Length: 300
Picture 1 (cartoon, one colour):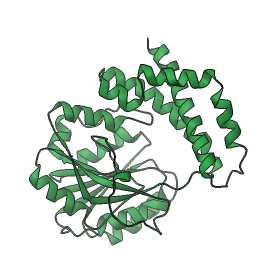
Picture 2 (picture 1 turned 45 degrees about the vertical axis):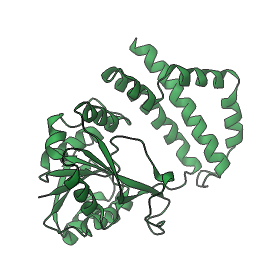
Picture 3 (picture 1 turned 180 degrees about the vertical axis):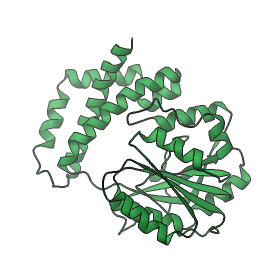
Picture 4 (picture 1 turned 60 degrees about the vertical axis):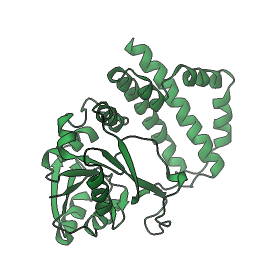
């Protein structure tokens, strides 16, 4: 087996069927790759979606059901069940294009030891996809980003997989990337290994979740800094003296009140305007840095 597509899912039944269909509709030979899915304790219609997918699977399709344990533990369960020489990580809201596996394998043939990053194009709908053409606005500087990345399976096992101490949202893939970089691996971009990432415009009802996620990400940022006390980890997470100082200044001059006023009081199911979305992201960033300071103080 040349490759494994590995993904974890939690309560994304409305997307998972389309994602799995795309995984099965690859131009690579169906005996060249497999799909390994970890169902991380979903409580929606995910089991039914998986059973329908089994009937349509055109390659080896392995499903692991576990109690809700978090992404790191789910990834490790998927790694343990994988048999491909290369493991390609995607998420359950990522739609790979037909040449996705073939492009990852083609680049691995030239860079057998390295990390291969594919292009990620955001879309608000799987029913109205933008052209599958990479441009600079799709660029990500992440060394290892599980929306679209592959690495030799033996290498990910060599470093011990994902750190399961990352039990909250954020940075578990950055941690893996830093450990792979320490082995001397390079990160190679293949602009033709394209996947679409589902990113609908947030609604007012999403703000609470955005802020909750930002606070969790701040706590795991402190966790990452302890594991990797270097500039790369600090820069990736915004955990630098200058960025924390800027946040303190923003709070000091009352900018958070200005952002809240700009956000206003939209109806819960109303998609946010560009202005409201900008303000919502500033409020989430404020919550991130507020939690970062608290977590840093608690850790000292």
